[in-house]
Amino acid sequence: MIAILVKNIVSLVIILVSFLGPISLVYAGQNTHLSVSQSWSRATTSLQKTGVVFLKIKNDGRYPDRLIGVKTDIANHSSLHDMIHENGVMKMRSIKVGIKVPANGEVILAPGNKHIMLIGLKNKLTENSNIPLTLIFERGGKISILAIVLPPGSRGLNQSGVSGMKHKKHMMKK
Image (cartoon, rainbow, N blue to C red):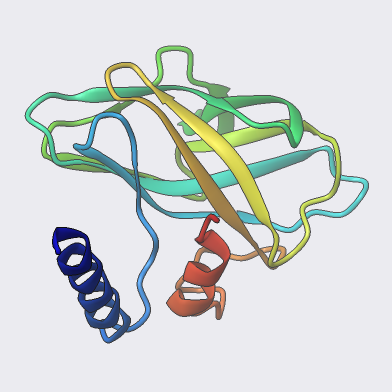
């Protein structure tokens, strides 16, 4: 009886969510106060050996957290980077101390700002494929995500012509 009730409630929730329209899939980690959304990258050529990943991290918790690492099998090395303006020149720097995610706040990794570098790509990043990544947080543990690969030169999910529904399709894990 309870199993049937739970099944009916789950079915109802799925139906209601389908009417909300295009949305991004959000991944939650061990610390349920953290969520990751809008994860994306750009397609590369077979000659390019580096790639980037951008995303949004939200912390609904009372305590700050810190993104301290990233793991992936698609590159020899992955690390956190930031773009800084120094003497009139934009330069990229490795972030050694991690990226702070404030309590009840968010951080956006975006072009020209903080981002994830994929160094030593094993294969080119193909448009409409997914990049599996594991984000490692100081307090929240690990969150596994998929980042969709957008066309070269893309500025993000909203500027690329990729709808939220298409993004959702590529983000879903089975």
